[in-house]
Image (cartoon, rainbow, N blue to C red):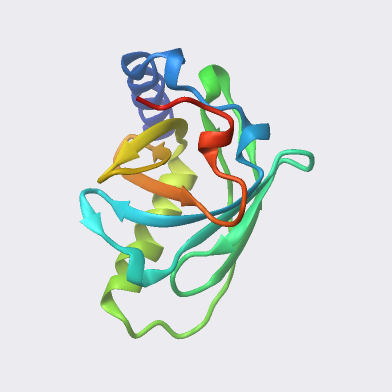
Length: 149
C-alpha cells in the first residue's frame, strides 16, 4: 500500500514539472557529482552517480560506500533501482546524511529533469521526498545537449 502511495506521489509530481524539462536516459551517460540535496550544500560528500544507458545501470559513490544497480523505468519517466552497496565505515555526518537520502530517493522512484541551481547547469533528480541537484563531470556537459534558460 505504501509503495502505491509513493508511486502515485511520484507520478503526480512529474506532471507538475512538465515534460519540457524531462531528460532522456541516453543524454545522462557519464559521471555526475552531487552539489545540493534538499536545499543543503553537500559537495564535500563527493557523491557521484555514473549512468550507463546502454545497460540501464547506475553506479558510483554515495559519500560513504560504492554503489551499483539496474535502473527500472516506470511510467512517465520515473526510474528506480535497488542499489547494491559495498559497505565501508562512515564517520563524517555530511556523508552519512547524503548516503541515507540518496539511497531513499533512488529506491522510492525518481524523475530526472534539466535544471539550473546557483548559476550551475545540471540535472535535478527528484523523488517524492528528496531533491538532488547534480552537475556533469568531465568534458561533456549537459549544456551540450540542452539549452537551459
